[in-house]
Amino acid sequence: MRKKYVKLLWKWIDRKVPESFFTKKLTAKQVQARWDEIPSEVKPLAHAMIELARKNAEAGRKGTDPYSCLLYRCMLFALSENLKKTGVDLGLPYAWFCDGPMVEPVWIVKITNGIVKWTCDAGKEICGMEKECRFYKAGKIKGA
Image (cartoon, rainbow, N blue to C red; front, side):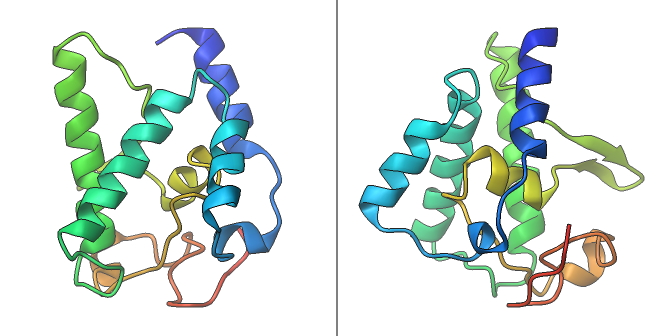
């Protein structure tokens, strides 16, 4: 992965956003405005995240379903790895934990500029992030 991209991506992820960024519902016009703000280098990754979230919603998976958060993040990692085999690197940020790769939910929200929202689901007991994750308490936002 290019150093320039990694630096840009982390600057985008680490930027300060208001608490409402994580919870405020967006109109179609606001979604378009948020999309337009995403740096062009990050858009392929953001697009993959948004489309996977959309497909999950179409399949009936919701934040209240057991393991939907964990499943989404695992599918996102698998998609990224499969695309790498074809020569396409989305530049997905992840960390390795004892039980596998971890894509932090807050990264997903920030990469997609708040277009993909997040709620913690019934799988929260197995993800191992209950103390660190701002989405752990269903419906309540904790500081990140």
